[in-house]
Structure formats: C-alpha cells, structure tokens
Amino acid sequence: MNVIRTIEDWRGLRPQMGTLGFVPTMGALHDGHLSLIRAAARDNESAALSIFVNPLQFGPHEDFNRYPRTEHDDLQLAEKAGARYAFCPDPAEMTEGISTVVRVGRVSERFEGESRPGHFDGVATIVARLLGIAQADNAYFGLKDLQQCAVIRTMVKDLAIPVELRFEETVRESTGLAMSSRNRYLSIEERLQAAELYRILKSATKRMWTTGEVGPVIDQAKVDLMEMDFEVEYLACIDPLTFEEVGDVNANSRLIVAAKFHGVRLIDNVGVKVP
Ligand code: AMP
Image (cartoon, rainbow, N blue to C red; front, side, top):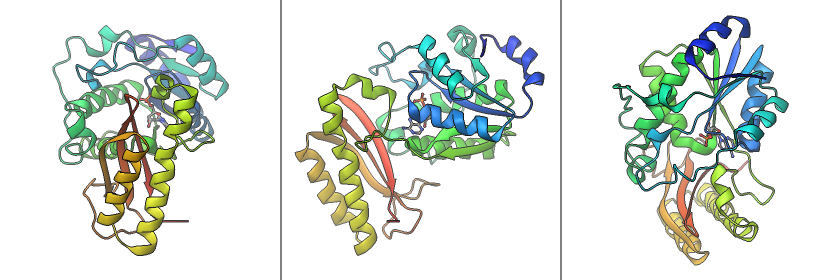
C-alpha cells in the first residue's frame, strides 16, 4: 500500500497507477466502504481510496471532533480489500486558502440539505477537489447516502468532470441496519434496536408497492418509528435523480429517512419496488 500525503506526491505517482478506481472516504472503514474498494479493484488496474474527515461538511454542532479516526486499521483493511494507493492529505492542504465553494442547486436543497445547512456545499467542494486531484477513471459512491449520490451525479455532469461514477448498493449488518461509521456511537443492544428502522422501511415500501398509496403509508411508518424510540426528521418517497417527492410510485421511487435513535442520527433508504 502506498500512502500518499500531498497533492504533489499523488501527481508524481498517478502515471504508474494505470486505469484507476477511486473511493473517497472519511475513514473509520467498515464493510460498506470495503465493498466500494473491492468494486474499484475489480474494475480497474489500480484501486485507491482517500481518507479525509472533511470539516466543511459538518455543521457547527455536529460530531466533527469526535468522528472516529482510525487510520492505521483503515489502511490495513483497505489493502486487504484491494486498494494499492491511499490519499491521506493534511487537512491544511485540503481546505486552507480555498475560496471556491461548489454549490449544486435544487437536488441539494431539501431533506439532508435542509436538516444540515451547508452540508452538501462542503461535500461537493471537497469531492470536486478530490476528483480534480485523483484524475481517476472511475469513482465509487455508496447508495446508502442516496442524496449525496444525486448531488455528485449532478455536479459531475454540470462541471463536465471527466470521471465515470459508479454507485454501489448499501451494505447492511445481518440485522438489516445499514453500516455506518456512526453506528460506533451505539451500544450492541442499541444497534439491534436500531435495525427496526430498516424493518419499518421495508414493510412501508411493500405496502406502497402493493397498494399504490404513499401519504397514509408514510404517516403510519412515522407512528411506528416514534413508537420504537426514533425521532423522525424526514420520511419521504422521492425520485432518486431529482429528489422531488412523488405521489405515484414507480419502480425507481425510493423511501428515504433520517431519524435520531438515542441521540445518533441515522439515514437510510430503500427502493419501493418489491423484488
Ligand atoms: P463516508 O466515509 O461516510 O464519507 O463514506 C464514504 C463512502 O462510503 C460514501 O460513498 C458512502 O456512501 C459509502 N458508504 C457508507 N456506508 C455505506 C454502506 N453501508 N454501504 C455502502 N456504501 C457505504
């Protein structure tokens, strides 16, 4: 594994990487990240990840300071999953003196954008910078962060960034809980209970698909979630490209949720279409 800490060093090594699959992460790797790295290794001559806890995407009262930082373990896991290169920049080189903000209109405005003001500007600005540095052929993102996928897809298209985007399915614990670095904030017992989020989403999508009803199903699912101790921020059925809410479901519609469980903010989404 080559650990690269400066843009200049990356530029020097890029020619030897061949076709490159790039996976931006904030570290604290779990199987969700590793599935992206495996996909990058499968499709390209080299796979690389970046590990950078992006301060621009955290709100002032969010968990930037306590976000888990486990670089040593991350590098070992990434290497086992097939990464040959890791870009682990100094935060100063990534953010200091930067006066450009990338703001993606419309698709970034609701849901996560509303709950976390400035979040997507921070994501888009740093992902654009990372894509500019990496010069990858393919870049991999997880559908767990569905709105982030829509924001990045729009940004890459609008700015004509020369990279192919690959979106990979959400990896879950055996209980159904979507893997997330923030699950570390929950006890084992709480993680088991938090898996109810997925169960309730699944049963709601099944009802939506079979009855065609959206509003009443969402209302019921909100009640079910509150009864299980979740504080729902939003629960909506949307088109995954535009993030507009849909009244009539189709095979692409997805149910998205953000909810706090015992103080930990969880997001998830599932397709409405029942296989
Ligand atoms: P993060 O480190 O949280 O910024 O995530 C880095 C990448 O991993 C993003 O593209 C995420 O969408 C993706 N990711 C995070 N959790 C999962 C998961 N459970 N399954 C698949 N991809 C994930």
